[in-house]
Image (cartoon, one colour):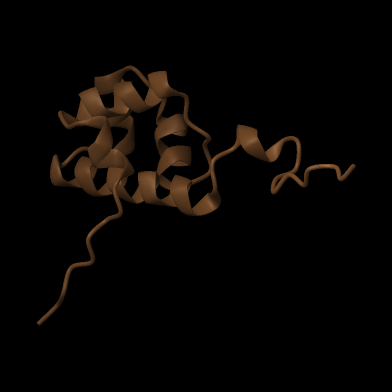
Length: 92
């Protein structure tokens, strides 16, 4: 009897991929900057620390759903706006 092969290591299911974390971070930074807030102001606005905001924007933080919800509320956007692939802007 063959043993099923798992495509992940035991702990990898607990952490989002680097690309996914970076995508969320890019979206958070873009939306925060559109609102003309620095990381400290934004953190205070949505009840998170400046350190957490920085880690999220740099793709270093594996977010909980609660933190994702707080970020979206602070940015006045849908959670899905933070998860979508950022559009690349063309410079003419």
